[in-house]
Amino acid sequence: MRPREVPEMEVSVNSATGPPHGPANLAAFTPKDWRVVFGSSCAILTAFSIPNSAAVIQSYLSTHQLADARAFDIGWIFGLHLFLIFFLGPLCGYFFDKDGPRFLVLIGHASMALSYLLLIWCTEYYQSILAYSVLGGLGGALLNVCGFGSIALFINTTLRGRATGIAATFGGLGGIIFSSVLQHTLPNLGWSWSWGILCIVAALLGLPSCFSLNLPRDAGAQKKWPDRGKFFYLISLGLFFLEWGFSVPLTFIISYATAHEINSTAILPCFNGSSVLGRVLSGFIVDRCGAFKTTIIYVLICAVAVLALWLPAGGSEPMLLLFVLLFGVASGGILASTPVYLSRLCNEQEVGRYFSTALALGSFGALSSPPIAGLLLHARGWPAVILFSGLSYIIALVFFVVLWLETARYGLPGGDSNVQGLGALRLPSAGA
Image (cartoon, rainbow, N blue to C red):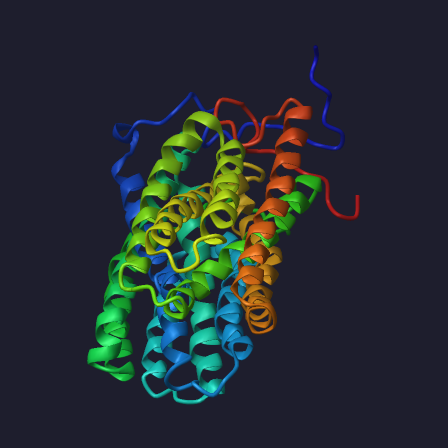
């Protein structure tokens, strides 16, 4: 049966990348490709190490500087931080598409280092908002766009899934390193010394990142806002509910363990370690199964892990650790597959703005999820918080299944690296 034609769409193959020809081999990477992957990895590590350590920071603040604050208020610190990382993305993406990553990555690393430096002297709620949430969110937004956008911009389509998986892995590795450092330095050296150490680390990571991504922007870049269609809106809604579900365990898992008298020392290393595994596996699976199908599988695993393992865990340490391991693998895989399917639904010249605009719309989920979870915790206890996370994943799953079916309906199985032309799909504008 002949596939239904796509109305008001143009499908073409970008001459720079050509049509994909199956799963990539690491030997196909050129020295320039590895340079981009290395620089992107350092940027992503710096951008997401602290968000992946949020549970440690939230637990410490709630018992020290902000011991008198409500869980709802503390939740805004971390919700606003994640929100700004993605909400500021379109602005960062505009300059990325215009000039490339050279100067943006430098500003991003400088902002992150300055954020950590200012946190040394933070003792009040508003100070944490300004230093951690606002300045750290700006730096994270710049590095997020530069890290994932550089891979989509400079690396061939056939290598993009594997390259994204490798670079995204460093976000999980950074979570392991930074959370372990904070768990040891906060009780032994205190708040100020802990952030001083991380400030030095962030500054050092900026050196290889700035050098490796010091590449010029192609002269043919277009200067227009990315086209939007129903695929774009389905992705944005799916990302919104993904953030609603993901932000809950990311922010509250340490507090949950403490409330149930479970040793929390191994929880974040296990989560970030399994997240690394999920990101690595995602790079291989995406190249074989397609990014949308990979995402659907991982979202389903997240929903099952939250509702079947975390919800009935109670004070069982083995069950909680099993949840952390399974959830880490699945959530890490989602983070690695997201840039791949976003980059395949737009032109390379627009990838920065398309990628960042979708994440910006989804960022409202990251902003609102921790405060909502804090209110539910105060009003109904932990079961309500966990159900909120699990149901959010189920709703996100529905959107991604519909998205996959819609792309298949037009003869374009989204994210399938064996389907020619999806990478240059031009969607109708919102006003069309």
